[in-house]
Length: 522
Image (cartoon, rainbow, N blue to C red; front, side, top):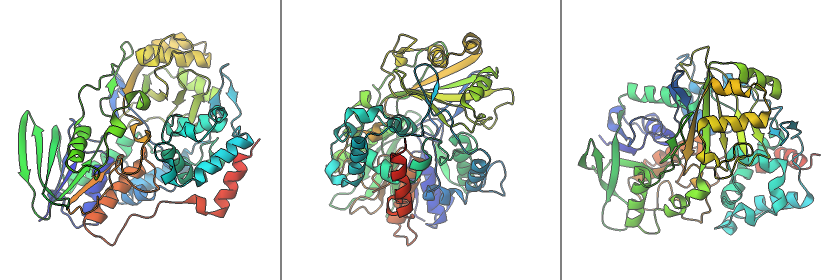
């Protein structure tokens, strides 16, 4: 029987394993996931305890048209109720705890500001429409700032858009255009965020754990602590993987591939070289050791110049792709009570809150509790992030990247003007996470910098994850990773069942009218 070797254990690799069994007829025992780290899940991580503090580097958002993700997870039983699928559980949670944000933006005085208006001038509207209509090929190598005047970056729309999706002005105009087109149907509810879906718990608990259980129950092998260093390729114009080399437990191992074996590589990683701090310590930025996912991509790209992408486009501009998040754990309900009063929404229903005038461009969110599956009832966890960790804070006169967790929380509390700040600080565990490549997939690029999922003339090698190319869909989403996995399986096995097309709301007259009305709100 043919075997499939999947490099990585993030959502792309886990999804590929599921599609291989569901659509490709593979037995679980013929699928091997090779993971460099000592735990599975890739960037969908979450861990901790009430005593040491919980941590998660990010939180992914969903929406109604994540068709590949919902299709996949509709066949995965929920851990809470095996009679329901993960998709059914996600939809049920949205019905009970849909976001309705009443405090999306907060000003320098710590007051909620109206965000119903997008704040556009006529020039802003024209530039936005022009960007949406510009062919992608005309945006090669361009930044968002090349398409808009300076005033655009002071609009309510930009503050909400950039903090919802983590765009920065110097990021790729191609990716910005894709997002505008992909999510045009969300424009009308963008201030309330009511079109955004969340999972019941963090994505590790709600997606990775049930998916991994389903896979391993079917016999899929997960090999942790395994760094794939090479994929050997046959001579000639065709792209055929003939063997793998990996290191495990300090030893190097080589395996030969059979004629029908498949290899799928997660190339690149947005959370590579992430470092954690603590309440009293600063996370130290260190990119001296290249992660296996980046290194393997560099090795493969060098073997077929011009055919397998350009990793240096994405992993050599750390100053343009770094931002910082933080997770706060406390047994004191004071912060939650104050924030529910401040925002007008109970925890889990309020959405993102952005301090639009903060030097760090801080955003926080109160998740529905519990946010971790085993989190006790007397423990509360919330999360935040900032897009400019290199800038000096407004109250704590340091760059965020040089702050301890306590100093970061102090900055947030002073923006909110809470009198109970000292009490909240004294009762909180704060774990910051500094991520040098977190938005590397948004960096300025040109056609061909990301390899095709199934490159031309490939017989058994595919690329999956955030740095493989899927036309029209958008990176930095779970949907993108799942779509690459489905595309890889369908392409390598020549299956009739293909991923559903990317939803294109811009072709729906009703959606376009609603979007244009939103652009003209006052």
